[in-house]
Length: 461
Image 1 (tube, rainbow, N blue to C red):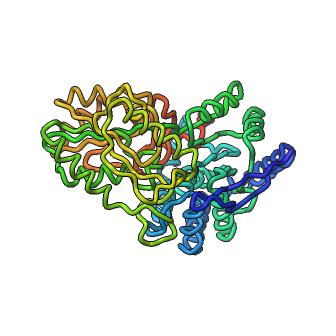
Image 2: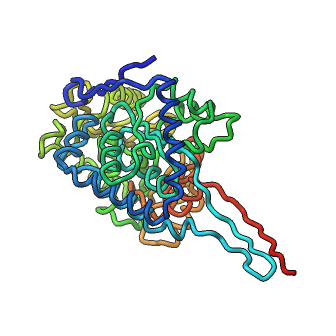
Image 3: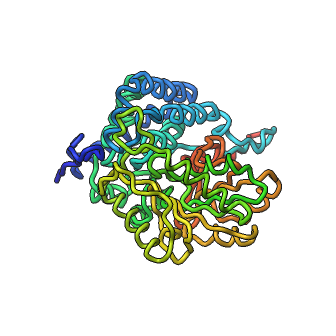
């Protein structure tokens, strides 16, 4: 049975887009077409596939900001002044294309008069990508580009909140010459998605979203031996050591906490500051946030837009209220534009502790708690006191110390003097309830293929 997916714009609560889902029969027919098309796609030379993917990336960029940026503002609220996601989208896709030949090259073990032995990387027949709404283009391309380059067919299921993104990507890749059934945007409800995974229709499933939904994906795949890669929740910490560049730390960490209305997978959600810098850091942080302009994301003067959905804003408001009731201090007065709905005032809290949800649960909004610490040991203990483990950000002039501390932090990525950035040359991965697997880099190619060994004994007489 089909149902209608409805994207409600956070700008004004209006319906921005609606699409009907495929029922199970239609979805299985799309799967069959994709698998049939994949066979010819996989026989094309690697360079040809990579070139077509890069052409598809270019085709998306040629649609222009008037379409891509404005649609994102309507769908999920990011201010148009920041542009879209195309620079990151291009950087990731083009990098993965540039390393494909090396990352997928056979590993030669022996080539002698008696034996040839090597290991190849074999594509999965069909990869399902389930992408989130907060950075829909960039999160999707992380898997779509390398999966297509390996020779897999790809089906993309986009979040309802960013309903049109998958259509734009399909349109772009089709214009570039990628066969239609090799890359397909598809609208599915949760039950149909679960049924397709449980029926073992995919060689690999990549999911970015909530912990609960990630668990549902793994349960659906149980017993099918389908590979599942997940990037789930986060509560990423920043640590400002006594030797940090205070101005740079405040500017970057607060931007990392507030950009995109705090709706970033690796956004900063908690900050630990050495006691010698604490008061000065808080003062600078408050000054930065007080200069923000909350408003309609279509207005070029707006620096912080609405949250993507009122239920997300309600959760942030609840965490802030609970913290204040428990003794935390809120440093930012309510903005005039705060409507009690999607338009939410950014907030900085001190007097917080790890008994409060604001320092433990994922907030995914424009709020950050700041705590005073007296030593590296205290900071390390607090940073690791979390069920999540995506990134951490260490602010210091001592790279050796940052590496030493970073090795003790339970995260997938360690930053020094920066945050909230995804480097396509490095494996994007997490631990604990943030999920498992790894995207981008050469490791991303290994996760999107399976090894196949060749052991050939030659006839010598």
